[in-house]
Image (cartoon, rainbow over all chains, first blue to last red; front, side):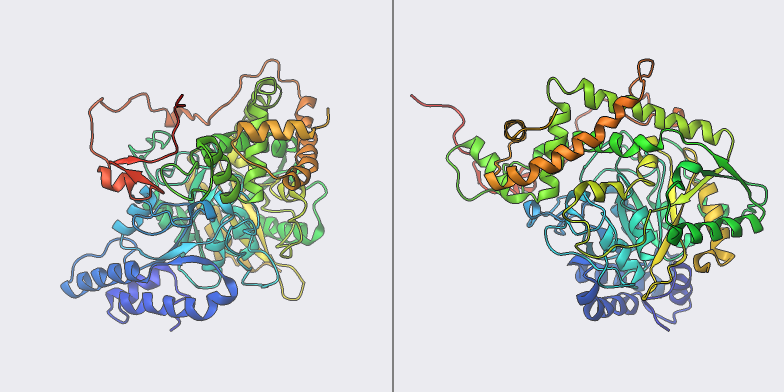
Length: 483
Length: 100
């Protein structure tokens, strides 16, 4: 049995039947990482001791006949913008090359309390700014389906790790699509809950009103399981919602017959048939399962990228002001005074994309421009959010492509930042509106090698159950392999 | 109105970024094209729209603040553990106050 390809359920079965030990499971993953990760480059930092220590704890519980926690023995990767106590956390940046957090993110401590074994920290675009993981200050991760292509971003390392069986599940973060888009590019499931569903405590902030932590998995069930463990009110994050976490597993089995699925015409205008054909097959499958498909309007879609790149960069310029060489992280070796220390530290420590976004954000917040840009963008955000509220008065789920294209080649968009930004067109709206979204595999292209295509489902606030229900039905009916 | 080198320098100053002439030259057209793109928001009439700074769902409204009780978080040693330079239990930085 290939221990690196099995799901959470099977892990549990194998462990409780004593057919495999947690130690063997973790070692199988570490071995696979050693051989395969030199090509994929999903991991930035490995934590074998931490993973094995946890595995041995689980094995002792198994010997003692103790009841096992929810994710006992499950090997997991954690995106490097998420704090792990005592384990280097770089955010994909040189400015934090040697930063060791003194605390765990809430999502991390919940996973470890549930028995998960952290294999390591996965690569990402610097401070989660990017759509390809090429902005990592360290190296680019490759798409396991085609090593000449990007895995997507910014959670490219986590998506690639799960796709390449280098972890059973992984944690990522999503601000403008950074979980959903790499899930689509890598052919795995990636989910972002409602804003406030999962605590952001310990997630290194990029844009505080847009950031989310969420899971990657190879199946909807695995993603639902991880979400249930990490979701829920956290006193350490005042934006985390005091909304009870339902039994997501139970939601999976519900019948989708009669559910109304809205297909927004704005998300299909100008869509290449390469992607559109597969999404249509996905729609056809859901129709066969008894869902009612309806064309809807999300009229402010065309303004979403402009709105997002003003708000996100403004918040980022504020959040990244803390990297000044004073309390942690890189400090420039030479400077004449404090101000020069700040300027040189930041100039030397940050990569180009981060600088670009900080400057944009600073500009749109500066005196004389604040009203024209930032305030205007906040008003447009309200309009975009309202589009969704009105749509969900009518339909249960909204269905869109996750990305206008499958994975592009490494280096293809690095010199054209605006083009790179436009790749987020289908994902930023959910972050702006705060609604939950999931990307599921929806077949592959006819290229050589074949490239995964992702289908996105969105639901209204705190209706993750409906998302998981439809995604699961789609998976069971063979939706991941439509052709 | 197109962005100038002076604008880029000014913004870099506000953001505590020391950019080389080469960097300014590289960023200028990129920032300019992005700002031109985001200008499309002016096509929308938002005179009667309230700005939305944050997603605030009714179900997620937390009206209660925590009680004003002090709690321990990190000890001094832990807080200083990542310091690039430290002295006497403090973060050490270049002199801030001018001396005559």
